[in-house]
Length: 261
Image (cartoon, rainbow, N blue to C red; front, side, top):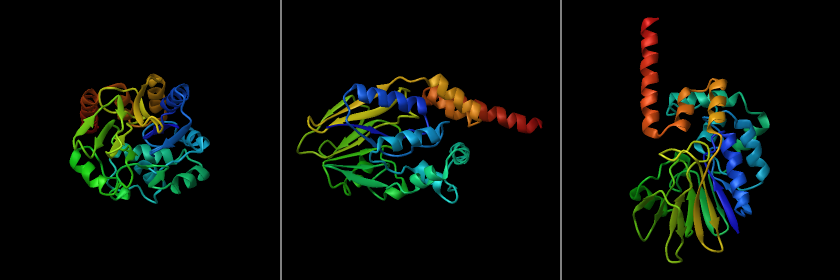
């Protein structure tokens, strides 16, 4: 079987529809979503409906959890908080209920899935280096696990004990154990701003990284028209370094306005 494994859609309708089209064009027969369907971008309701219609395994991500919580936790930064507060106004009670019942982890056939880490999944731990991966592997019971959360494609193997940042293809070995980050559909980070997901061929035992073009300009237009934080659009348009510089300029301009008024 061929699985398309998606994560961190973050209400980016244009990216999601382009990824689904790409997956079907490459013979995908099954879909899996690792969470964070909502947050940051301007089409949360539409993205929830599309993922629900796939009738596939879906996990809860941290932004999904914050969206349905009684109160957004204090640890959430201001930009994400403003996005979540707006998102709450867009969701129907039925969509809210669906998000609230999603699991944090599960097993799909011979592999596992989680949004963040199998080490205390409800704590939303980041796995970005070999040390954090080793902690996760203590809880992984299968040869293969897929995760998201970091928005950066990478993978780890028990035997190699190194961090592979960025990859095109992994040929899985029978005597090894793997943890694979599938990147982000709706808010990719790093230099490559195309939508990201993986295709897993469970017969051939191959994981392929996919990068898909989508209408970034339209997504950013919607963000701005909705009044969502400007940084949400900038992050889709620019590299992380350029986005950080642009955000600093915005913050300095806002401080100047506050001082003058």
